[in-house]
Image 1 (cartoon, rainbow, N blue to C red):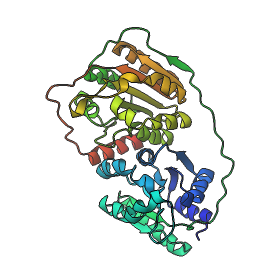
Image 2 (cartoon, rainbow, N blue to C red):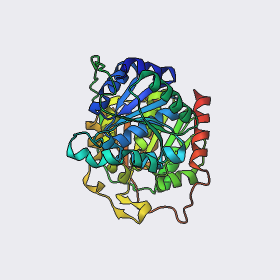
Image 3 (tube, rainbow, N blue to C red):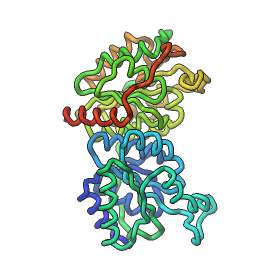
Image 4 (cartoon, rainbow, N blue to C red):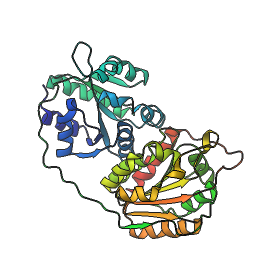
Length: 378
């Protein structure tokens, strides 16, 4: 078995100091080490953990994602449509529950058979992690070489690989909503383009703008293609988790997340994670038109959801219903002065700009220039 602390220290020597994940009994000792010695974010699900680690990588930190192999299926979307196109490498440790030949719970049987093939299909380099320390240390060097090449690398971890590592007392701060403003008047229902114009003109030299997948990113590109913009092209629902990882690692930046109702509904657990870790430099703006506009205008169920209440209950310091673009601009300018994790909700009109184009910069180019921008501002 591996001495967990010594193994973790080898990871730290290679620069891996940021972790996110979802617990698994096979990985509990490595998780305990991460909680004790590094920055660890407990994600609501494995896909969010991948996005959080990707945001940390944007911020200049090598990151480690930890998950049970059942959760590898949850992480397929960001691993194929976020880390792959943007070249945002994460080092992964995935447990091998349901290993063929060993007795395990029935829900792990199939995933135990297909975990290696699933990694192969996603073109992720991987190895079974050795339980011999010297061999494992050599494996870490190989993994780090792939990360340096901007490619992900995963270790598949069998039962009883890590020695017991006790978790030190975990401290939790209870973050409560301080300001909640609900609907008080009629909605102006501006277009998405009008709304994005307002958000964009409020940015300053310390602002990074992350736009969710679909027409939000495409319209922001048409408003202004700027070095500090990132246009997500997939990984629906992961934009605020990406923002969380970036905001936690680069506290000097203003991280503005532009989300959509369909996107947020897909991974609402991210609100709880954001509220728990409370980055004061993150502003989360939800543009709600109650439709999946990028796929033909099918209705979402957002008409039945009070997002302002939910964000407040999840611990966002401010959760504000915005009625007009004038009010939106005023609240953004106020936020820049006062900060605090904030959630702004605005209803927008259905539909989008006619003959809307697509970015002619590749995701990898967007990532590279954004990292240059971030490093220059650091």
